[in-house]
Length: 314
Image (cartoon, rainbow, N blue to C red; front, side, top):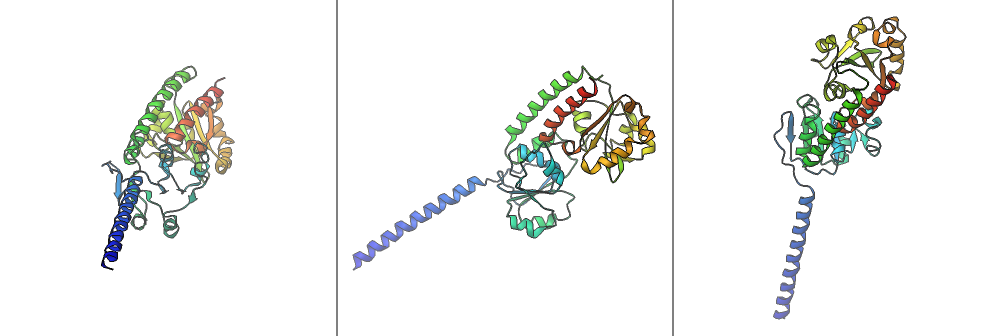
């Protein structure tokens, strides 16, 4: 009897060790699949909790950076602006994403995200960090190209980020060469859109094509745009004075919701008497495509912009 008990005890010990070994192996495997980011010190970035390097589900409220995340292969599971969902540059990459706002804490928790991304101005950060680790980004602390490098560092995708940046430089150089056959290097552009029937002008760090035209391609804006618009980033003007701000070309961002406001401006006598308008240099572009300045949007904007210039100068 004593021998039987000893045998049973020995067998139990073996099974226990095997189980522990399996649990340990499973735990190690799980840890490897959800490695923690090095969380590099980056100006304008704040971390709450341990940020996963390869997050499986990301709830993102910092909509300016959706295209960066998608380009880097990060699984974005939510969107907060219809412009994200409707962006032709993103295609169907957000087709299974849910529309959420940062105040929908119950809905966010139900998604069980392993990372939440938010702007520093978000009023719900304290609530969000109780749900999952949070990456907080302060808009304007990084330019549109530096942001690619910085997000690449956070998610361990620096190689992908640098590859895109190098390809972007090549694409821009080729576009500049092609455009030189249609535009003088001193050609000026005014970037604008409409909101609630009002006219707004944009600088070189507020989307709508500003980063592409003013920064990457290196074209200038009229002096009055540089003075009144560039520093704040955007500037509202009335129809009566719009002519003072229009350069050699006007870039009108228009979509379905702003088509009526654009039509109203184009029918006005003030607009019709602007030299750029008389010369046929009004470029009506897709607001949904030009709104963001992320890598995916920029790639499509560059091609679209070159095509638009060529059509305006047959």
